[in-house]
Length: 262
Image (cartoon, rainbow, N blue to C red; front, side):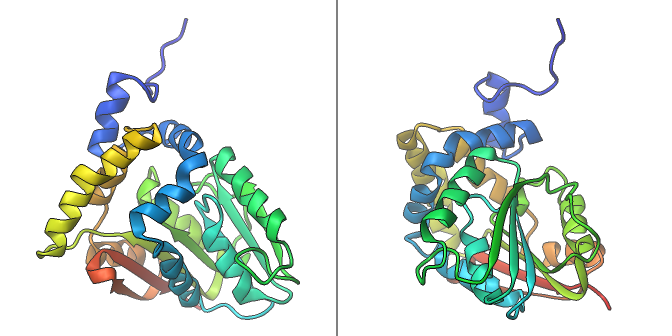
């Protein structure tokens, strides 16, 4: 019999790690597989539907044009990938990559239901693929894409610098890397509101959704993620230049963008 160094998701150790906002990679993968079925509904409730607007702005920052190629890392159920697809139409290619098979199945189902339509799915003339991939070792060629994005997924990277460096590697010189993430405002009243939201309301929603640990992990993973200035420095250290960021939603949402040097 062999012993695993990674506690199972339902164990006491796993619960403690979730509460601290840190989980080993296999646990994060298992967590997203578990919550895949309620993920879109919980996003809509927790953001009052504004997450679609934030993804649209992040897709704009990618600087894509018709016929372009884009990668969305930690794509989840594909919402940011669909936004990117609209910006490379017609003739472009978008790949949505994630390590959660359950999330990918839901993303592919969305794409199949809306292929070629004018709604919130895959526009006509775009190749949109959803593929299993580890953000820390992306299975793509150097410079394969015009842009790479990650929306609400960078704080789940087991190694932030490695994940961002991989995104930089697969983007061509002159292309862009975009990070959309929740951040923690430092001043009231929003800091007070966010503390109440994360400490009381989000865990309660998680219990209603049937996965209290997952929605305890969420707020604590936000707290341990680098502040906007610090994240900009990390992106610079990973090789990006012209790094800048936009704060929106009163400072709760940060959108960072940087360019791969020519």
